[in-house]
Length: 370
Image 1 (cartoon, rainbow, N blue to C red):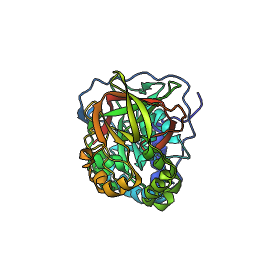
Image 2 (cartoon, one colour):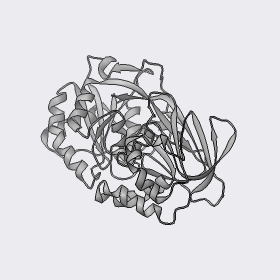
Image 3 (cartoon, rainbow, N blue to C red):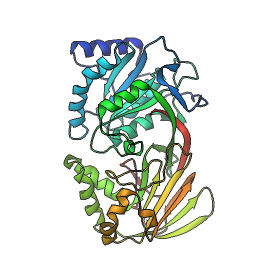
Image 4 (cartoon, rainbow, N blue to C red):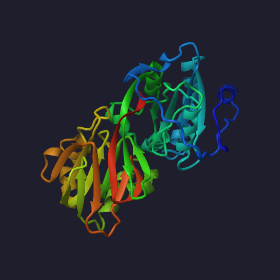
């Protein structure tokens, strides 16, 4: 089967390259053709990274988007490598994998899990984390190792660098890579929930932070074009999205119940975590350990409502505002009543297309280093 793999010799070659200053070997783009086995997810919620076999080195795969934040992620990563080597010493095999384009992080993650990596660590912003999370699944099932015992579980890690690290804010983590390395070193694991979005084709797409529909998703779509301006991209995206915006009537079904009409929807947000859009606490009660999602619906908002209530949206006190409602759900289906199409949906800041969609939670789906 064509593609890159991560045998022990590969890790050793990567370490040798790190030590000698030689260029790193970069895995080629990989697309899976064979269905992976489903892992055993019955282990306890918390445990240490090295608990399974303290006598062997741990294999840590760092997935880096070197172009993130206008190249800042790549520059900071190069500066971080010497400290990373000295901090972990001989206890870990460190494998660096640089992404070469969209979806590459998904393929790297899948192959690393199949080859028994102890952890796959996303280095970058929410976009890189989003791809790595999607790499934990294949054809609707979790990916598992082909070479380790069935109980082996690859953990998800995060070194938050880049334009936006909204997921990290839910845990109170700073954009401090050295703090993140200390978390990885301590190795405490916690099972977290993941959201899954299913479209008309039946294909699943996963998210770890927030999925959103209509105005906010359209703003995110436009903001992605202006990431060279840093956090200002969110403001530019929002201004562009407001041009020609109209509130829409939706049909929604929550928790497999009856269909309801939800009129004049401005934005509908489904949170596994709390923040999006560069620090906006849009789903303030969301908790990725809770086993459910928080749905927040903004209805009949005008452009001036956002200006007047923006501070509430950022500090998470908007649930008391008129025309804002919140529900806790296991699943939600959303359709555009007009049937005209063109209602945007995104997850973790990544454009997914348009309605209709079904969103549901996968409780305790991934172990994360917290």
